[in-house]
Image 1 (cartoon, rainbow, N blue to C red):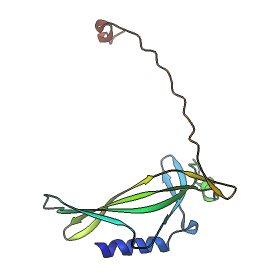
Image 2: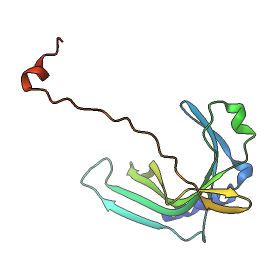
Image 3: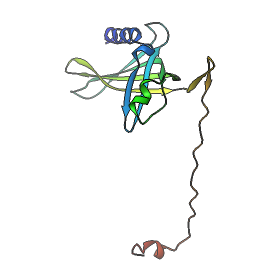
Image 4: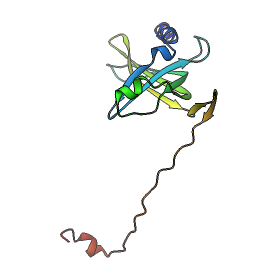
Length: 152
């Protein structure tokens, strides 16, 4: 398992950089992203867990530091392909594996970003989150009988 993880991380480190950025479609938006893994090839954490299951007796969770670069969301694919203004999000990438029929299979992946930064005049500054307006709903005090009258 460790050999396959090191091989996977080495391949990911070779393919990192903006030239390998992929356009991703998550309905209804498009964005372009790529990733960089920081540190040496051997900097990762791999935890194994035994389960009481015959189909998947072992699970493993890989934890590795990663920096994700992504553009802002756009509704048109053509607008994303020319966009080179990336947002940087350093964080930790969690990858789950299961042992099935004697082979390790990748089950899922989760990236937790610590912060999001924007490149302004060559320096990375934290993105200010826009506060969304919330609607104030006035609740009327009704008796239990008035609440039960759904036909009104």
